Length: 561
Image (cartoon, rainbow, N blue to C red; front, side):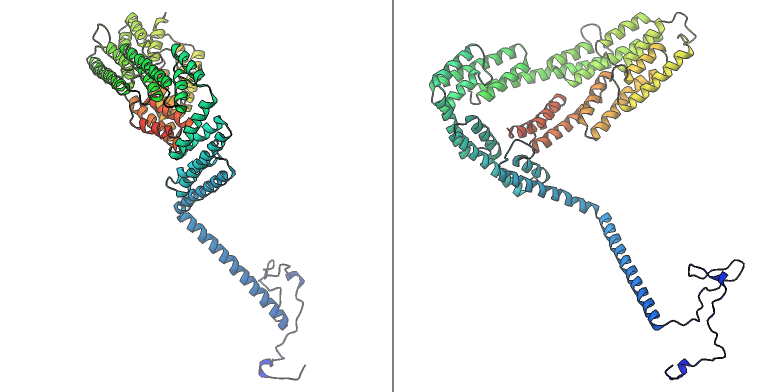
């Protein structure tokens, strides 16, 4: 004790109690106040025991540190939560950054490919990468400039190959340069130099002799055809009179072929010959007249087709389906003769088949089985896979096999047969849901329903399921088109043409699918995928041959060559 005494330290010694250990059975090792069994809550630590100043400072520091840690943790949580909320509310903005990142990556890779000399010919080449970048941003200056640089590099490569007399490499590089640069004085100069070098390397007299022999044998097309050989001579020697005369003979031969084909109403052949002539001799004098003749033949055939279609549809409405010379069947066949593959005429034939099947069902209802069979046989020549035809044939077969008909005209089947039919119908329904409408053979919905009807020809579920297949097929077509699975949509449309060839709505479906194929061809052309673009364009051409976009997309693809 230091002897200091003040009021703050004054105590009433009479009230002071010395620290005691307390009852052992009230001690809790957890250090918290607990309620002893059967007693009141008591503290395990006597608060009257004095603590030193050092202990107090230590505890205060520990508590302060703990509080600071809690505050930091809370702050981090708030920041992370805020960032997450910001990202959630601005998803569209964040997504918009992704194409820009992809674009920059493509451009960087394209620049590296150009610097390393990987110019064209693969998905990692400079050309393909710059084209892919343009697909994301068609007006990107860096991509446009990069493609120009690739073209100039290919032109330099052609010059180097020409200097080394590597004419094949020079020609390939020059073609690439032309497609990228769009021609120009530099490209034309190298082209002329290459033609002269090739001609100088070959014997002109030998080339002309080979061309004459090819022309005499009627071999015009191909790399060793008369046209190509005469053109080779003229490329190196534009004033060569013998080669020029020989090329005119080629043109005359093709012109004569076109006239003969038009006289035989072979418009498809005439168009092919005209295309050959246009590509081989774009300045041929008679070319405009030949084009006009082919166009006139097309107009006349279109007029005949439209007249036959209109008359066939009128005959169908009037009930003149078959029989005699003036009927829907004859008119639709005439329309197909004028325009092979015409979708409207094919749909008309399907409607004729549907009318025949309807008449056959009416004949079955009245007990005229022979007439029903004849009508179904005629319908089968027009729509052999029609779902309605299959259902009607099952009715006919069930009736003809009835040795002891019941009151409803059908033969009772055994419980085992009934169970088998139920199983077949269940499998058919499952196959229809999966889109296995006509394939695989024997396990398709169509075949399973027909097998069930072969056992029980009057089974209502099997009959209904078979008739519902066209509607199910339309749904699968719709989903495939929405998913961009054009191959599957094409299969569904072909299936529908077999199941319900007279469906007037199929023309709309054809147009939708053809338009989708054109979109894909256009996209592939933009990305420089020439082969894929051509394949998609051909699919579109088969579906919508009159679509004006076909010529636009075709021209875009040709510019890639």
